[in-house]
Amino acid sequence: MIRTSSRVLLPYFLVVLFAVAWGERAWCLPKRGLDLPNFGQVTNSLYRGAQPSADGFARLQKMGVGLVINFRQDPSETALEKCRVESLGMKSLSRNFYAVIADL
Image: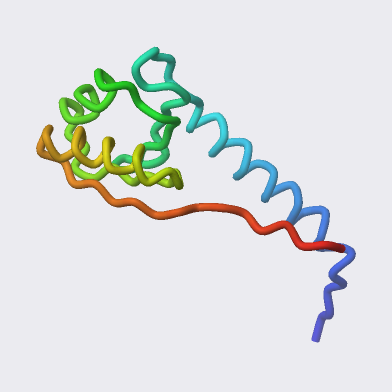
């Protein structure tokens, strides 16, 4: 039986991990646009980006986007976005998203 040390396999694992991560990063570079800031395609059916303008929501609707997920925490902004998105025939989902930083 052959035993392979993790010290031997670790460099190969890191090379593969880096190659996959770099390929994904290059594939998901943002597409420029004033109405869709930091917009990029992650998969064939998943996009990500920063806060769209009103024209940006219309552009998303024309692209066939059916669901907009809002991670902001301000209830007034969330309500306004929900109205804009639903008026264009898309669904809106709001989820608070925040990071917890633990004291070390």
